[in-house]
Length: 119
Figure 1 (cartoon, rainbow, N blue to C red):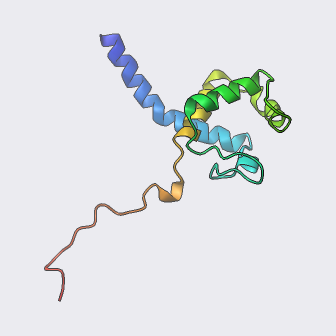
Figure 2 (figure 1 turned 180 degrees about the vertical axis):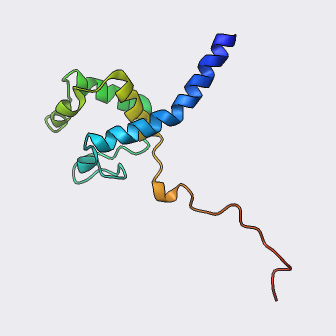
Figure 3 (figure 1 turned 135 degrees about the horizontal axis):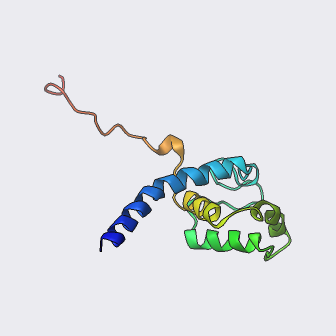
C-alpha cells in the first residue's frame, strides 16, 4: 500500500515536469517550424494541440521505428529516430495538455468589490 501511494505521488509530481520537458523538447527539436509555436499546424502540417496522448505516442513510436503511413509523414522519421521512450512520453503529455501561455491566467479571480459599488 505504501509503495502504491509513493508511486502515485511520484507520478503526480512528474506530470508537471513531463509537460515542461515536452515543451522544451518541442522547441529544441524545431517542431514549431512545421507545427507552429501554438501547435496549430502550419500549411499542410497537422495541428498537435490537445490531441489524444495515446495516439501521439503511437505515431511518434512508429516514426522512431522508421514507419510512416504516407510520403509526407516520412519527413518525421529523422526527427523521431533519436527520441527515447521518456522523450516520447513528455512530448505526448505536452501536446495532449497544451494550453496557450497567454490564456493560462486570462481572468483575475482575486478581484473583489470594495465599498457600496459606487453611485
